[in-house]
Image (cartoon, rainbow, N blue to C red; front, side, top):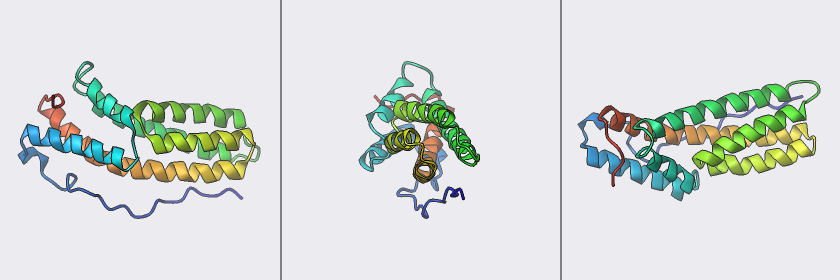
Length: 173
């Protein structure tokens, strides 16, 4: 019997940026808040240095690059996790398909710096190579929980970044 992906434990935001009225804040304060948020995510081990590098790329790419990257990443992870879960509900698991999904997940999480999801990809790969449906389900549950936690953390980053983009502001120097 296939296991269901469980919901993560209750999340309590560590800062107030989601509840704040960011429109009332000056741009420098918003930039500081965003940089502090990125540093907090790094300190918690949710992201690595690649996340900060992605943030810095908006200076040479486009104003919306960082925001777009986060939104697309979250959507891609959601899609891949759903596809993996669907593959695992089949009577005979197609491990080549699972491997393909794993590569997408590993690539996107590595690029944006979502290190906990990237680390879980190594475990998924092991379960796939072992043809272990149960192992895949267990690790997929871990990935799902990490995704939900990261998504909640990224919500604050997205809110701040949307406000900065609406002002036409690039990152602080």
